[in-house]
Amino acid sequence: MFDIVSEIKKLKKEKDLSILAHYYEDGAIQDIADYVGDSFYLSKMGQQTPTKNILLAGVVFMAESVKILNPEKTVLVPDMNASCSLVKGAPYQKYLDWRLAHADAVCVTYINSSAEVKSISDAIITSSNAAEIVSAIPADRRILFGPDQHLGRWLSKKLNREFILWPGACEVHVLFNAKKLFQLTQQHPDAVVIAHPECDESVLQYATVIGSTSRLLDEVTNNKTTKKFIVATETGIFHQMKKNRPDAELIQAPVLDEACACNDCPYMKMNSLEKIHQALLTFKPEVKLDENLRLKAFISLDRMMKITSGQKVTWPEKFTAPL
Ligand code: 13P
Ligand code: SF4
Image (cartoon, rainbow, N blue to C red; front, side, top):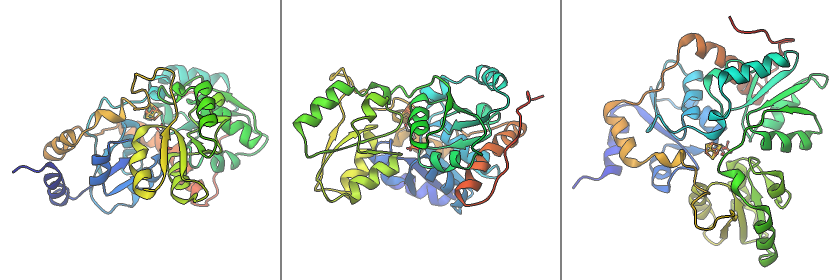
């Protein structure tokens, strides 16, 4: 009988390929992956995995980041339509105009962005390393931060540093509802509220722990002072949380419309075992980037890699329009 999981495992070996999966993927996908993690971890594993080929089970900007850092590797995705509302909300030309209007500022861009937008940015960040990267920028430099305004606002307050914010948002995290969350905390006073910084600040005000997906998983895994967590992020993360803390009660943070599956990222959930199997058979869809674009986007991503590995970097004084 055809067993898709065994087939995928067999093809992975035959084709010298590793599967990197994000925490928001379905549990079955996370379970067949060689590496599961947040967006920064997946970028690092793309560099460290010894295989020649990679399938990124996540969204396309994550696979593009792996390709930008590893041009010699073939990088596959299960579905090329797996975008992100932050990518869609930051088109290249508008982002360029914004940059040019603040040419003296350092442009810090969330990894949830297109390769084109990365190519006109000074540094890429993820929610797990954003504070470290921004702290490496000289205090007298102005900072442009995009495309996630909520992550930017949270970070700006945390670091006590003014940002000029791009008005983008994650369509999943903005749906968590502050009023209903407050009511839930009243019903469960023993629960620790944990939230991803892509949530609106009205929601974040109730969170004890705010951080990347891996930070939130770490909290559930290691905080033994409670057995109850209210979780304000995408549902896929529950898979690892339940594995790591089978004794804990995990409560999904509320959205306004109880009937909708709004806590599911529609892009992450485009992926399936069937599409992964197909991609391994055909070696398609493959992420391909123009080499000129890749080299430009590499600069900002590489600054992230350098700073997070303790290396010193320099910052351009002024941005000029690309030729
Ligand atoms: P993490 O870097 O925390 O995994 O977040 C990625 C993301 O897309 C959250 O919506
Ligand atoms: Fe983008 Fe939001 Fe989906 Fe993350 S959860 S990939 S930010 S739409």
